[in-house]
Structures are given as C-alpha cells and as structure tokens.
Length: 459
Image 1 (cartoon, helix red, strand yellow):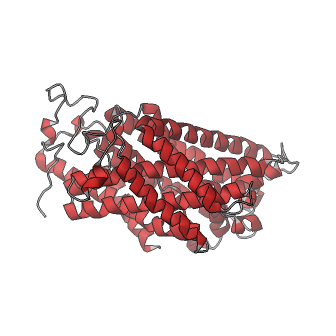
Image 2 (tube, helix red, strand yellow):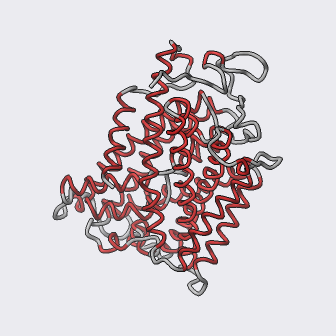
Image 3 (cartoon, helix red, strand yellow):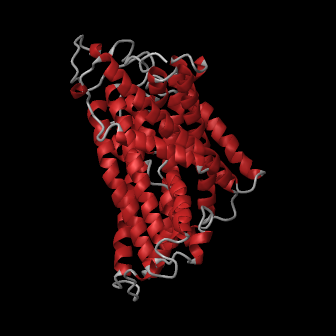
C-alpha cells in the first residue's frame, strides 16, 4: 500500500484553504468541500457537547445495566464499564483529532477513504448507515412498547409511527432544530441520572427507605465478581452496546459552526461525563440491588416497571417511580431515534459526493437538509417497525443486528487514525499545527483497536 496523503478538500494539509483566501491554520473551520457545499454549519458548541453526551446515554444504561449486574456482579460490572469508558475515550480522541482538522459530515467514511482505501471507506460508510437505520427502526419499536405501558389498548405500531413523524419533523426543518431537540433531550436525561445518583446514595446510606445497605451487596455470596473472568468478559462485550452513539459527534462535525473548537471540547467533556453518569450510576445501583435480584434478569424494554433505576426509586419509597422512569426512557428512545435519523441521513449524502452512492440521495432543501436521504432512511426504519406485526421480539433482533456493526465503526475509526498519523509522518507535517492532538498515541489507538477486535470476536 502506498503512503496515504492528507488531503483537505482536494489540497494537501499544508494548503488548508480559508474562505477569505488565506491559508490560516488557526481559522475556526468554516471550510467546505464539494460534499459540504449544500449543508449548513448551524450546530453551536452547546449542541455539540450534549449530542456527544446524549448519544452515550440511552436504554443501554437505563435497562441494560441491570442485566450486566446480574451477569458479573458489582465488581465485574464496574470493571467492564470502566474499561469500555477508556476505550471510548481513545476512540473518540482519535476521531476528534481527524474531525477537528477535516470537519466533514459523514466523517468516518471520508477518513477511511482518504487514509486507508476507497473500498474501506465505502464499507465503513454504508455499514454506519445500516447501523443507524436499524437503530432508528429499533427505537420506533421501543417507543411503541413504552407508550403502551400507559395506553395498552393501542398497538405499538401506531405509537411507533407517531414517533417517526415527530423525529422526521425535527430533522426536516433545519440542522439547528435537530441540535436544539437533542440538547434538551440530553439535558432531561442528565437531570434524571443526577436525581438517581442522589436518591440512590441516600437509599444506600439508609437515609431513605429505612435500610442501610452500605457495601453489603458487594460481599453477598459470589460478589463482587460473579462467575469470575467469564462473567466480566460477558459484561464487557455487553457494555460496548451501551456506548454506541458516542461517535455521532464525528457526523455533526461537518455542520458545526466551529468544529476546530467544539469537537475537541465535546470529546474532552464526554469522557468525564461518562465516568460520572455511567460509573457513578452503576456503583450506586450495585450498592442497593443484589446481583441475583429477579428484577435484573427480567428487565427489558417491555418491562419498564422493573428497570433497575425504578427499583432504586421504589426502595426509596417514591411511589410514581415507574411512571417517571417510563417517561425518561421514552425521552432516551426519542433522543436515540433523533440522533440516528440525523446521522443516517447525512451518510448517503456524503457517500454520493465520493462516488459511492446514488445521486438522488444528495438532494438538499434550501435550508441545507438532505431531505430525500432523510425520507429514504425513514422508509427503511418504518419497514423495520412494521416487522413487529409479524416477528416476535423484533426489538431484540434489531439491537443485536446493529451491535457488531457498531463495533466495526469504531474499528474503522481507529484504523483510519493510524493511517492518518502515518500520512502526517510521511509528509513531515508539524503535529503542533493540529487543532487537537490525542494523548498517549500510539498506545491509546492500538489498545482500542485490539480491544475492539476482541469485542467483535466475542460476539
């Protein structure tokens, strides 16, 4: 393989173009390529930060964390989620380094094409489109199941179609409407998690609920490491699903007002927020709930009343916990669907401009929204929703189908980053000119790549 070139919009990195005709490397990023000329840079810094965070907080935390606790106990769950957090940090750091220098929508495919091979870029791009199209379909199914908790007499497909109309309406108006919706969705999830951490800590200390748990559940029978290394390994693979979506910050870079500032900032904040929200939540949960609690093994998207979060609120004596958590999980599902539709509508647009997709998917509105691609992806998601009429447990099927392909996206990011750095070294480019430089290179990127391969093999 020949040494790759760092090309920034048909020029070498040393000639990074400025709209005003200068070659200022400190320019904040209002640079467009052929694949960007019809899109609008309308996402502000606060949008970028919350989009990155919102992508990491979903049903994987609110529901799936209970299954993890049941599989490997408190210690195994903490280790697996902490380790996956480190992997996410390095993967997102690698993405930030490339996206802050080359801020294009559909970044994964673009970087894979530039720095590895066009065929690799084609595979990564359409793979990521499939991941999010499947996720949108899964979230439409999930939204119907969740609303059925309150209105059992109406079929889930009806509520799924209503949810589809809602997220399409948000995305079709303007990229700013997507950013605002995702900002408030993420903020509500953050508030719910902070409330859980506070209430759960009070329950563990005996202030609420009348029982002082302390660390007793960490000493209960096989705890803290249930089923030893095997249990931790199973949870490690499972935990990876929970963090899918963090990479969506790379797709938004192409429509960020200031990608050189906002992408690195969002990535830096993401790691510490993940530690707070994920690790702290799971730690509090493990203090209050035994690993063999029957509600953990039965918790699913269709049984919100026994979500581990709900269990903790009930132990605190808060009666309406099921309704509150049902609302929070519905918000999480809509948020995931909103982000998924955004990402999956941008990928075909970018792929066309790389000669890797059909032309009709590149048509945009006057406000810079690729609405044909948006409608096309929504159609695929609705077809998947309609499968719930004939296929039992279609939600679980769709989640499993998208899982491994999500890991393949992370694989593509790390491989592209290694080749990106190889290109930098080959051209003699000064690393100090990078808007953002990932720490612990090459250890972090190689470590993440090896662990991702390990996770894919674990499927």
